[in-house]
Length: 227
Image: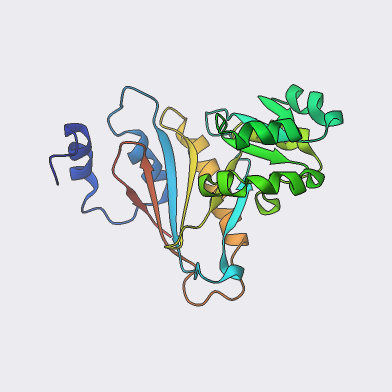
């Protein structure tokens, strides 16, 4: 273990480096009982999937409102016509609008976590592809961020709705809560996420679909979970 890691991390790592995968409840108990940092760490779940990321039909992408939230609100903006602006802001959007909001973002404003768009606005929002795409902020029907129900989507994402997509290695990451959460809430959130991933299994996938599951805090080692 490199000395570039802190003493707390190295001490936690010693307790799990030889660990066999644990049942979900035990893995969660292990992570939340690691030594606390000076902030409430997010708990992340990572799945290594047996998908081919180069095949469009095997891409895993979506969003989910977890049963107990993730302990963090998000800054949401909404691209919508003027008749939906007040409704979007009342639902929690920090900014809402059409052409003027597109221009603001195009000019470099990026102080938000999620962008929602109504379908009729995508012809304008598409101009922002180069700005929003690399940051994972481009609205998409697959993630539920392009929808005629703008206010509902704003409310869900502002409350911490989780977006996910597989990376080039076939891994899917998602936050399922905070280290301060009651263990059962984290179990419920993890089970809800795993159930959704299972339902999204592509028909063309061959061999194992979920190869491994790991849980970790922001500053903790990973804990392997039994499949």
